[in-house]
Picture 1 (cartoon, one colour):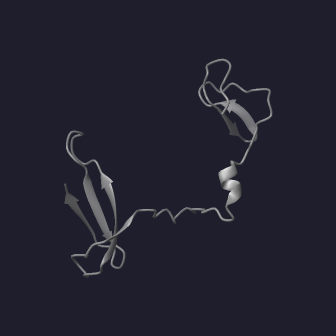
Picture 2 (tube, helix red, strand yellow):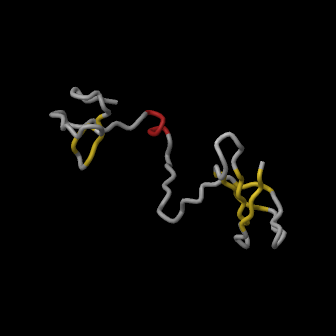
Picture 3 (cartoon, helix red, strand yellow):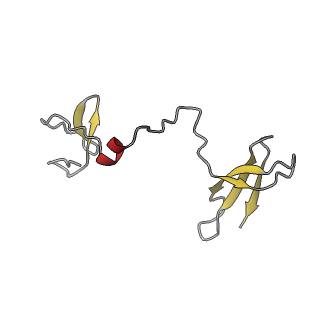
Length: 102
């Protein structure tokens, strides 16, 4: 990771040029693009396309509408921050959505 000499912001690559994310200053250096050793070891990399963004965890829970046994869930902070979040469930078969308060 490289940092800007002017403002100490992070240098990012935009349109094949190295620029500071904070102040926009361009560097004279050619941007370094390296692939970590961890990525090089694997044959496949998961690519999530637009529209395929359902990466929610799947759990065993019965849908109150169709009685299907699989659904996925996500949490949202619907009340004040000192109270627990609300967990939403969505049936994988009929797409019925319901919530549970903790």
